[in-house]
Length: 106
Image (tube, rainbow, N blue to C red):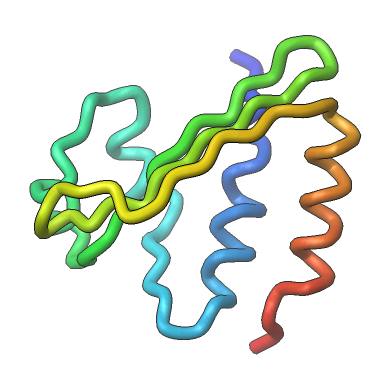
């Protein structure tokens, strides 16, 4: 079965986020346990030992990419930040290259 657009790009996102200071990023195996399931943020946070959860979705239709993300305060079950964007595949590839160049080095 071919990988979805999100599955192909998820490892790169995890790698980029894991380089940020003071941010705990769980392994792909831990995150994939919740793939395709409705989640209860407080329960997931307890299971993973975290206080906030980043959820999101990436969809590709032809050359258009749509990305949505939410940062959830799991203890209060409140959205702290959310964003949606869409554009051409070139826009996403440019963003990905820039994020790799500007990621903090460890």
